[in-house]
Amino acid sequence: MKKRNILALAAVALLIAACIPSINPFYTDKDLVFETRLIGTWQAKADEPGVWKFEEGKDKAYELTVTEKEGKQGKFEAHLFKLKQEFFLDIIATEIGTNVSDTVTASLIPGHLLFRVPQIEPELKLAGFDFDWLDKHLKEHPMALAHHRENDRVVLTAETADLQSFVLKHLGEDELFGKGGEMVRKDKPAKEPAVGK
Figure 1 (spheres, helix red, strand yellow):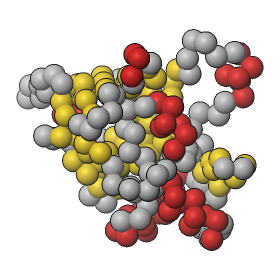
Figure 2: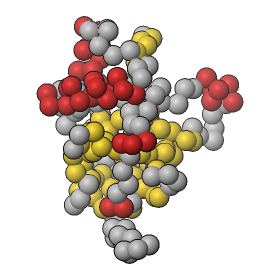
Figure 3: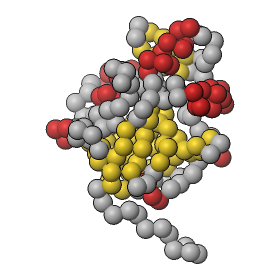
Figure 4: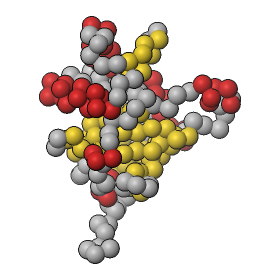
């Protein structure tokens, strides 16, 4: 397992540190799907103590609360979408925290984080970018995808169409996305809406 691979599905700090964020979303409105199967509380299967809670939001969005050890939480807006026949999850932070100075908050740029979703049930499987592979690829091919690099921090600046093309181009190579992890449901699955409602 690569040491900077995004396997810590439940730690907000590690999510921010290990992911490569994008200033633009990875989806368009036509790509969005809403799966009630995703709604609920999911617990990481591995030794990680994290919990992801999905609640229904507005306009095909989910409100996502990520809780890590010691009760630390982060809140995100999440969008499930499809490219070809593949599911993906785009999340962006909606709450930075309560003990952060206004100056720090003002300097932060909200970034979209992308996860591949190979499976929703019975376990929720999520895989983020393989940081090592993408970092190396962008160093070797800086024109492959628009981005900004500052020290070890990389932020994608490409337009949504270019992001999607890049993801689909490297999807089958088992390179762009890491191994990922699995989460198990902690509650009963959400009921499907009744026909006609």
